[in-house]
Image 1: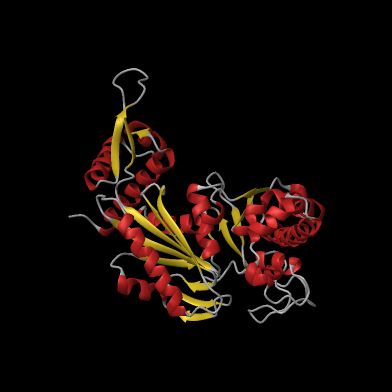
Image 2: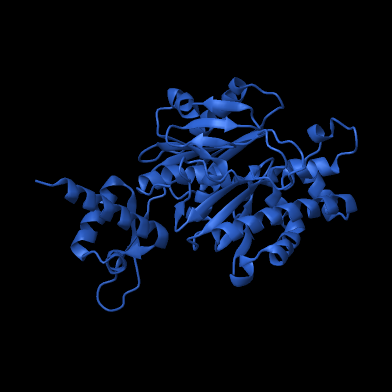
Length: 390
């Protein structure tokens, strides 16, 4: 008879072995035993089970250090596919990946100002359907769908509590998606999702304490402390785009005055570049156009980026002083202009951050750029399979 404690211990050990194989990519049974402290018989039994399930495969023979050559193990990328959804303020992007988070297919559709919730959901379904058509045959098929959304969420229930820039409130997006697709569904705030993606597969892999700053149309932050996503008491932590940075400033769509995202985002940049009284400018101007102007020497564009970088840096100063991270990752659309903002961001941090003078915090760009949220949505599904909750 196997007791509940024994079942739990077996599951913990299985998760441990799976994650060692995932992290090391190519490793032998003996090396796993040495790293984990589990005896070789236990490791072999777990590995045999993982091979039987199709999660792990034997790659071939490794280098011998005397005696028989070890059999090298790795995660089977063809175990299944995952769909990641990035619901932005003005776009929806869907990415299909294999079990190692390698992109197999992706597509983005732009959203028009004033589109209804139903129209946006229809676009999401259109892209997910295309992803399914393009999915290769695998052992388990589609393992799940992950989704990042621009607002505060109840991630356990999959409810968008409020997304000010979309004008959505109390939308059970998980249930809406689950009614159409028979698979596991995971929903979270887009900055949290991107932070998890960077931690699993990107710039943050070697760091235990990091903050992902999502600077797009709005601004948000995903905070990882001791390898765990910091959610706060009610799961709502990270809405730092709505911290007040100018008490006499502009009114935000959230109802507050002078929010950080009004000064350190794509919308701030476009506002700075807008001619007076040109109400159609923001509808027609694209970030990529302003980046090109700046790189071609436009003083107006360069100064606009400098202003955005200044306020981005001031917000990052607050994050560093509060959380003392090892790494700040700048992501989302503003990261496309990393070369235009990074010097000013670092100058502001160096000049104004009290704790940064006594630490070696790094400030880097997202490895995945504008795909960070979709990759993170993939990581939500994979982390569940590996029994690691964020």
